[in-house]
Length: 261
Picture (cartoon, rainbow, N blue to C red):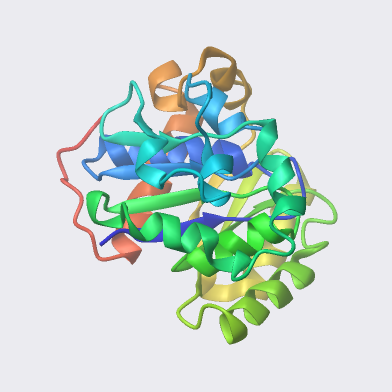
């Protein structure tokens, strides 16, 4: 049965989708069967993997018109599948308002395909919306990317309150999978100060891996490729490979020591 991880931060531009795309792709390259679910109406995870939605998407799944297996597609990358989305998903917020058990729509949909994967990663929208609550209700763990910039922890308190509320009322198994520091510019004192502040606040929940700010990570999505395919020698590739190892180790999954890109 798959381990489901929701990648969440209600602030935009913190590296959430970049993490979803690259972490999932490298974990898959390491031999894990990975499904990534694009739960953001912007659809950047879908396009970032060189995919496009035509008539079937996660929107139709949440509306109960089709099943998750009907939208899961294999990507061009080893062991990696995707359930894609586009702007139509924004309509789910309003259409599900009066639907019974609306918070459980995604959980129910995932249950039907969970046996086919080792990990399911959910890229959430940059808001604490009904879509995000669906992701939290479906997930086993929450990964929180935090940008190494001023106001880094702004809004994190609200996110943690939402996580605790969902854990108490909808999903008692929900835990913090980890906190990921992103977009670090190691040349600045501010970036290093933020790292220290976040580690002081979250302690052992912070991943040892820190994702650097790099141009190559920004370029890769325009080519529809994860960073290890676009530029396997980049610092971004090394960072996400280290993160993938760390995530797998935390979940007691052995990684082949001889694995390399």
